[in-house]
Amino acid sequence: MLEAFWYIVCRSKQLGRQPLRRRLFDRRLVLFRDRDGRAACLEDRCLHRNMPLSAGQVVEGTLQCPYHGWRYDGAGRVCAIPAMPACAHSAHAIQAKHYPVKEQDGYIWVSLAEQPAQPEPPRFPHLNERGWASFRMSRVADGGVEAWLENFLDCPHTSYVHKGLFRNPSTRVMRVRVRELTDGAEAEFLEADEERRTSLIWKLLVPKKVPVQHIDRFIAPAMSRVEYHADNHDYFISSLCTPISASRTAINTVITFRHGLLTPFVRIVLPPLAQLILQQDVAVLRRQHENIEHFGGERFRVIPQDLLLPHIRRWRRALAEGRTPTPRTEQNRAERERDIVI
Ligand code: FES
Ligand SMILES: [Fe+2]
Image (cartoon, rainbow, N blue to C red; front, top):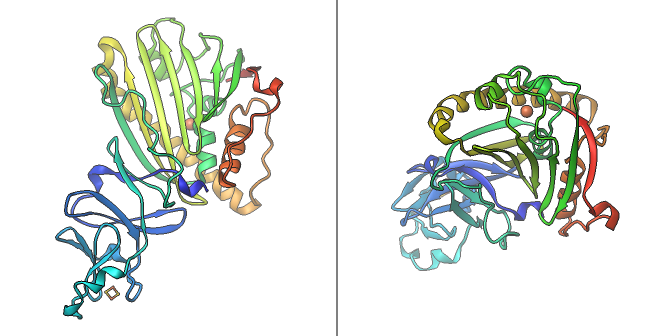
């Protein structure tokens, strides 16, 4: 049932006059814009001889197969068969598999279920709101969705993989509270002055010693959100992980922020640094993925400081089986605190 949720298949601006080939849960899809400019998504396979429709072209808002020129509308209905001129009416009876599509927040979203599990795709906080700036990053990378969600929501790796840039190793013990939510789980760091001020990003963005609130949040089934708040700034780093296949993920990250008078400066300096951080994660996950391929997968040792991984797994397993995970015992449901060094 994870297929029933909305996933980003491309940026809105990527879908122009040409059809676009995409893969989602290993299924081959083709996207195009119909006569009204609405995005449409079909199985990438002509009903006639199995030709990939993505190799064709868009003609008058219909998708034309490159082999014998059959044309499909946005709902997958065959609307022209050139070799059979009298078929104009009957052609509509043949329909290729098509999928629900939404265009929202500058992305094209597809669900593989006739009845998507959510009425709308998830939103990115404060995107396009007055007073807020934003930028986006898109990557396709090795590693499955869970590996990526875990990475985005895992703090201890940041002192090693992103050493000097984002955090530096520390021995400072911090208190963190993990909460189960109705749509996922979150980890809130309770000390507002984590010892990180020596890294480049913190020096640039938080030069003064102000308390910074930090929350990591998993929004089922495929979104991570990291939040930092201080007196004059707020940052939301949201990443939607789209499963291309079990071992390949398309990552779409939106960073929305406001930083007072520094906002224009941050808008210039932060994107290349964020790209560098993402590149470092891509390299790490590629190695992790290669090793998992070699040794075989599921032998992960999980410690209490892997704060959100158990929640990510529990939610995704439940949703895959078509149910919502039941909150664990009352005691466990309550806010749970533990110590961590990041
Ligand atoms: S294979 Fe598509 S029209 Fe023949
Ligand atoms: Fe990272």
